[in-house]
Amino acid sequence: MASQTTKFKLNTGAEVPAIGFGTWQDKEAQEPAVTIALKEAIDTSTRRELGAAIKKSGVPREEIFITAKLWNNNHHPDDVEKALDASLKDLGVEYVDLYLMHWPSPFARGDSSFPKGDDGKTKVGDTDYVDTYKAMEKCYKSGKTKAIGVSNFSKAELERLLKETSVVPAAHQVELHPWLQQHDFAEWHKSKGIHVTQYSPFGNQNESYSGGQGMGKLMDDPVLVEVGKKYGKTGAQTALAWGIAHGRSVIPKSKTESRIKANLEGDFKLEPEDVKKIDGIDKKLRFNDPSGSFGWNFYADLDGKKA
Ligand code: NAP
Image (cartoon, rainbow, N blue to C red):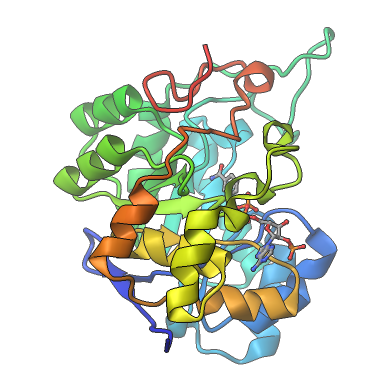
């Protein structure tokens, strides 16, 4: 089955590729990995390596879709633009295509990404994410980012954001995969014109998610493997195609050249009957919930939230 290069339209009118390239973790492997993936979209948390790879590649800036994220210690409205400027400098670009608030939860202001109090616990901040977002709206209006959005918001948090701010987020980056489908929540985004990007599209493959150990890999789920066979694809590729069939972008992460290439071939068309089969394997299993360490009760109204 030939792969496609699907693109989705954001509410800004810009197009985002269906398959992006996640760059979280594996710092030392990023420059080579990004170089392999550069013709696709890039989702970045570590910037210098990406900047170096962009420069080396010679790929024109307008052909790359770069998403940057605002980290929790920079939520104060006076820090938001400065943080974006730092990202732009490291990346060596004039603008990013999408700027996301990584989490709704603020940490204490300052240089430390994980500020700790004397008790060893995360020092949280007191900035309201609505105020943070309003500062992001200014970055959007100035052109330093072509779109703004959020990540890891609950439905109630997003509803409040929509009510109290003026730019509808172009995208919401959330944990979403065949074992955590969040069907209603995903559909709700469509009704609001918010594009959904699936992070951790292979679920428990992320080594830091202790909850996923000892239960087998999502990409080996028999339904994914069986459906994939029909198209000459792997379970991993089929998991990506399923997200794309639902109109969402997916950002698999890999530092392995063969896997990066294979993942890019996860953009292929599944028959509706096969999409339906995969719709049937939801386990409401969420692997990423740092509520305990971030001092914030994430995903309170969403599937997969443990009591
Ligand atoms: P993932 O993409 O679901 O899984 C990554 C893991 O799968 C890595 O261990 C990788 O191994 C392995 N892998 C990748 N392709 C494979 C293939 N074809 N066959 C077998 N194994 C494969 O998980 P993720 O890293 O959690 O999520 C992806 C991206 O989402 C991140 O890089 C980040 O950009 C984003 N993310 C965002 C948030 C957020 O809060 N917004 C949170 C988590 C992640 P190798 O690298 O060793 O090949």
